[in-house]
Length: 638
Image 1: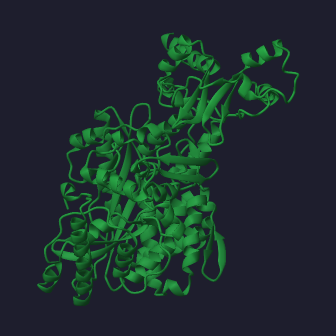
Image 2: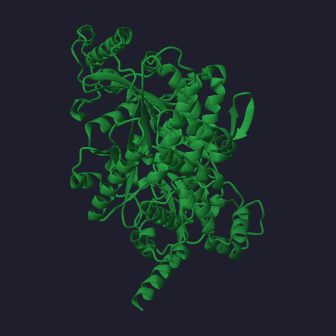
Image 3: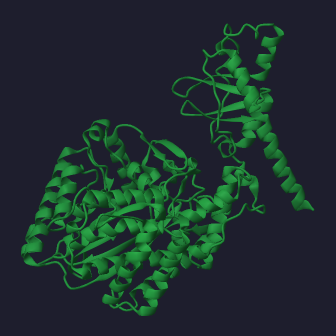
């Protein structure tokens, strides 16, 4: 299915023709199942490796197309963002050394990407969410210029009817309002595929749903987004919201988002999932389709089912069913999408081994998981694991409540080990990969915990931007060495970095923990705030966060000189504030802010975004910036 053939359209005739093809293809798939045309008796695995590109300042680099040209390998492709790459690993028969071969190829493509990135003056980072990613990298100018991505963005925006807006509560709280789907590019993963037979699909898909929570708890590697500490695996919340096309009416009515875990078991076959997703989610993209898929089936030819595969690609279940044709034979796969990229290739393949082992172990036991679990508990486990990682309390069968750590060490690692043995995986490979999981879980050193503990250990040194850069610098260095994350040293505040890149824009160092007043407050309150917080300027904002003025220490002194400050309760902020002060935005260059303050003799610049107050920059902040850069410059000259 070529990119040039994927499109969105306002032509109802085209949309209706595509829907007719989609319905025909579902019917064709049902006929294929009845006729036994899908491959059975084969167990194969595969994976997709996604990664971030970072520059020498350890921030996202929009270099994907340049690096792809340098690599020139068909396994590599772009993703949504120009700071992302993807490599599709080869299909492996599930046999004695399949995991070893998967790791070898993953290491190979990782090394190829790093070499090409170095030639372009960049580096490769493996992380579920890159800690240094900022809002300035999430515009449409950072989107890969491909028709499919822009069509997807336009279609989702049209369905939603307004900006994407959401709040995630973790250690910190992050509220995001964004006007495009580039938030999806915040996420990178190590997606794994397991080929299954049509008759066993329902049972194995249900098992995949059960084991996804403990798998994710052991693999979490995405705790920080836009400088905020959120969930242990924040990708889950971010991805759900980033492509949420539901209108207010649809959300109120309870329509599922396009990214979802599911709400019930699969009873009979894969067709149940495809039918439900077609029924629930509107067609947003179209493509060229085959003329007569039903006729092809009757002739014994497996159709490619282009319409079904495209629509399935716009619905993002965390365990997604996949249909494909390889060497003229149709097959089914379960694609698990929860494993984040990183912290190392070895960690990723260990996560895959854990998943495949649990799948095989449950399947070998022969039980129907629907008899042992309530689906609502399985879904609750998924959300708990995303939020809390190994600390999550999971509801297991026989009414057990266990931490993810206890469950993995006591029950699931032995189950995975027996499952891998049952399918013939080499014993040394089982010990290698499950040993990585065991060590990680025993030490409670996931990628997420490594990041959070590293940031905590920096104890507020430098600016948040500097701390995130130190984090990514250490991450890239240690993951390139190849030791699993359980062996990593915590990142420390790195004095040797070039800090100029941390002060290029106002948003990198502005004060965001603001204390504000309203225009109808008494000036005594503004004066008290200045005294309590040791500040010389207090912003005045409206009920919706809009900036309406600025109160300065000098204005209060004038009030004192005129003898009016003692008239408590009679003078309001509106009488002394400077209305409509000069402002800047977070992406204003620091040198421009300095010039603006000098030209207008300003001691303070409010920072606004979309009309809302988001920060403050003062003379003191600029003095700190200047002194740090000057000190660094003089030290380098010695």
